[in-house]
Image 1 (spheres, helix red, strand yellow):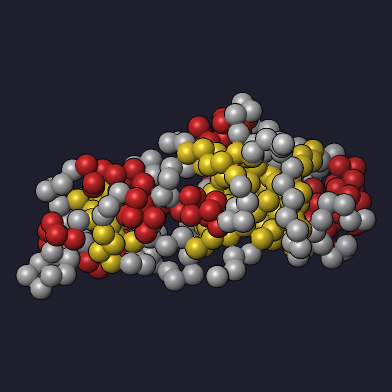
Image 2 (tube, rainbow, N blue to C red; image 1 turned 120 degrees about the vertical axis):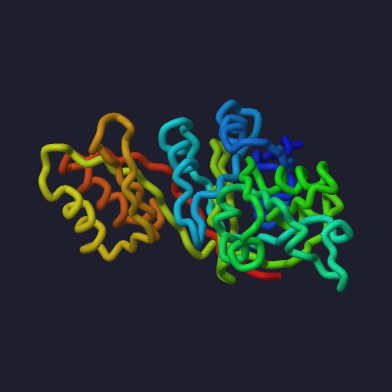
Length: 292
């Protein structure tokens, strides 16, 4: 009998938890919940789990730079799959404690709102419009914020979090869907040394890091030309500091092309020929969100 696969992720009740349940909805996989993103990475890097689930990009906030830096500088874990999942935050609290005379939640009774920094940033229009008086506090996860509300009754606290967290901790969704944009999605990466196969994946992607030679004017133009004349689509290109010295950058590139094609290896070889360093971060299926 084959060993049951395991995946490390952020705490139960977070959007990461919802996203993982969606990805593995028809598979028998053990979920290993970790408090901090560093613990998620280390769980897989140390061999305790087969994969880690990492939020790497969001519709509103763009790249999650801290998580990308971990992939680049701290661990050597290839990307095995990516998928998108809607990030829907809700105002969560005790309905009985925060109810007004009409039975609905009363904004004046909320003294503090807590959440993860990314989730908080996604709900700022709601805060400005309905809770401008409330103190804002950021915590390590949305689930931790909901737990703080649960463990501190009578203080007028509320949290931005998922329906899953509200149900798990026996609190109520005071107002649903309080994110600033209806099309708020998060892109997740499944990383680890264990291969992951997804049948019928229509889109294959490859992610690489490119470091340009210091003494080659126009090197970035040459890199982009290697993809352009072969009609290879790039879905993302982002510069990030190498952390070696000021003004030194690498380029993170997502390519909508399979690595085992004919054209992509030739493009990479051309880039290396001009003195660029190329590091493969992963070749993997890209899975869209399909609402049930």
